[in-house]
Length: 333
Image 1 (cartoon, one colour):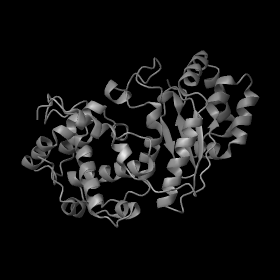
Image 2 (cartoon, rainbow, N blue to C red; image 1 turned 30 degrees about the vertical axis):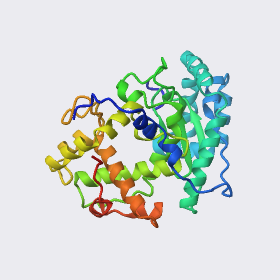
Image 3 (cartoon, helix red, strand yellow; image 1 turned 135 degrees about the horizontal axis):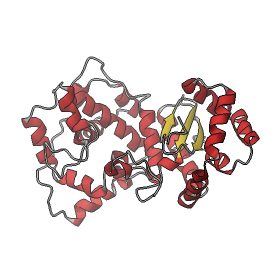
Image 4 (cartoon, one colour; image 1 turned 90 degrees about the vertical axis):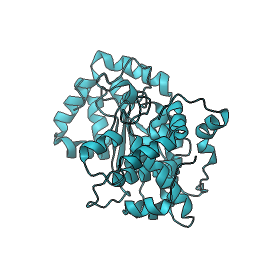
């Protein structure tokens, strides 16, 4: 509810740094200038911060039917309760301070509208039937980052104020908190959207299936987020991504020696797939979610080998073992 509050000590060359940092420049994107995708963000956060009378909240709810219906479908609140909740929240004295920080950090959101429009064009290029949703921004008191549905997207701007913001979710560890910057908004939306198209085999409970699923998801984001760096998409610091590239062979050897690809133990899988500050089974310096990163290496190698394969065809392929074997992926010496 809205009111509640391997060693990695390796000397790396400048070439490797530039290779990792500039991977977005090497990606080739189709010309989508002919595809219509207008984005006009509805600033509910501004209405909440500026509201002086309850009638302003009533008007906000009445004029944004898509938002109201979606919110009510999740909470079951009637209009009167919904208005009262938002009105009470808007009158919290901390809301104005938080909104001022948002204004300083984001400006008029023109950059976000432009970036979202380009990403939506790319989604429509691959999926012509995709209907562009309405986009709303809101304040939630750090209770929600994103809600991505078929008809609307809601962005909790106060969740994406960067690592140095004094207004942050105190329950979130620092290694996760630093990912919530304005540069991460569009890639995060695309990651949520990938779930709509990312098919899996419900009978395959292997580590590999998890790895390939996340690999496909990240490739979807890469193909629809032209301005995002790989480090932003994958949720790593630049140096972490460089270190992973430099120690790929050691990571691969660990997975092979421990026979992890076809491991079905949920507990073991979580050590390599779930959020952790580091993967201690490999090294104290190895970042968490390394299985997702390795899945990304396998999937993009597979996709590059299949020159005629489209992104929708990749996302539809639920055979993790086939993708793995046909990728012929092996880390470079």
